[in-house]
Length: 259
Ligand code: PGA
Image (cartoon, rainbow, N blue to C red):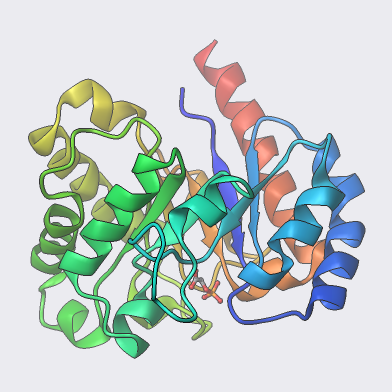
């Protein structure tokens, strides 16, 4: 059985002081919840401080982006080597990066390779835009993104995929559990074709896009969905805790059913 994952993507929110305050608020409650991998992804500038604060806890740390070169004259960029010391995960190919920073499939592919080279676990984001969804192109778009992101990459056992329909991100209009389950099933079948069936079965594929305390259960109850990548709701300690807690409870029920 796959261990579910809830990852909080804080995006460009929180100063260092705000980030430390938020972590201090979340840590005790989060640390108590088991059966779920709990990851928080604060801005780069807070990673070192947050790393100290979560030491000895079961909370894991992720970055929101990476550059694919290891060092050199790339003003303002953050290299894989710098992140490898600080965190375990890195979000790659988020739609906001594709949209506002022109990240192409080729760049995303280079970033996935760069992360894996230094032992960082990529949380690879893919998802269709509204007009693509409305014109029935979801399957085509998601398949293309998946293939270009992973082109030529020997299967990375540490990969996590997040299916995030762009129209659901930050809009309050989440996909339904069934919709997300269907597309995630399709992604899994593609992984089985690219690699093999067992690899596909073990892969965690998260849903992301307007996840809240009200709708999380609808997603994590679905058989294909391995957890969630949470934006807005991960910035409020009580909400994030509730999302993680519900995920853990559903997992306990499922374990009992399968025992
Ligand atoms: P949201 O963002 O939960 O605020 O919609 C999700 C994401 O972009 O990862």
